Image 1 (cartoon, rainbow, N blue to C red):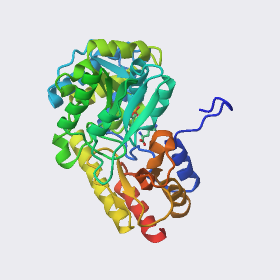
Image 2 (cartoon, rainbow, N blue to C red):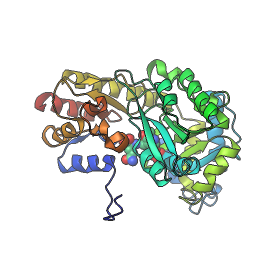
Image 3 (cartoon, rainbow, N blue to C red):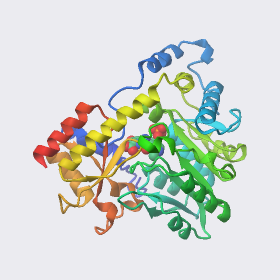
Image 4 (cartoon, protein in one colour):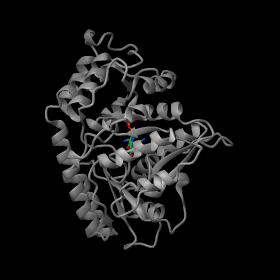
Length: 392
Ligand code: PMP
Ligand code: GLN
């Protein structure tokens, strides 16, 4: 937002989707699936709208969220991570993970302080840190494997630092932090008196060996004194439009987040919450089938990108691969994405747009990286790869 002219620059995701539509390009930019979530969950939401048990299904839900969904989130944490949460105080339902992220940043980033994150990073971290009157500082994740450099993170801590934002599994690199990496981040926060917001929206979308590695940060001993974690039903069930998420953590930290959240959306649609509670209790095999479908999409995309001369990363989770374009073009990532949309008919996102102040120096490694989404039907990915082969 530009305060001088009172104009809004839409997010990189919206701009990319608009450009894809304008140029009839296959949209591998914005991360949303082009197949709906499971039919039984759609039916559950449709029924919930007229089901008095949801009570009442079309009026404000409680600010913390429907008890049935808070219990289902706590139960999922117990089963998946062996983490015990009190659903009455340690789980709060949010309007998408986006609201949980916003409320946590506004609650914990002191005005005038510094907030640390690994970059590239999800775009709302920068905007919300600015809204809190704080400054976002980045520690780069380096190609080819994009592992977090925890020593570099600690070296970036100053006496002004208030909060660390981490994202695992990570958008856009797909990196899944190891339990040891998480433990070390928690240790840094504890020693320096910092808080952590851990964005775990891709927790149900983890592939290959990484499937056993992902843990919520709350499972690290001592983490609950410093960290809150954020999840997303939209990501977990391929229903991004429903905008249901959650934030978990100790009673004390969650109370601080709640103080902000109650003045953002206050609450979100009860019928969707009711349906998601049913999905979390019994996913009917959806999580495993969806992860397998996503991994197959990733393989198809990586193969096509390699054939076109790009160098995609391995991507062990989430919706995206990042590819190095240096061998096929002299253009920077942002320039390449423009040409790709307009002339090749494939839309993608320059990783530079997911860095602090959209860093522009051309020697920056992040400048040569482009993000492609694989949360799409095989025929969508095949069509995009056919265009790359024929037109790039
Ligand atoms: N965090 C990350 C890393 C994301 O990629 C996204 C969007 N997919 C979100 C948060 C926002 O999640 P939601 O749609 O549930 O608000
Ligand atoms: N999370 C999605 C992405 O990374 C987009 C979300 C949005 O458009 N705000 O592409």
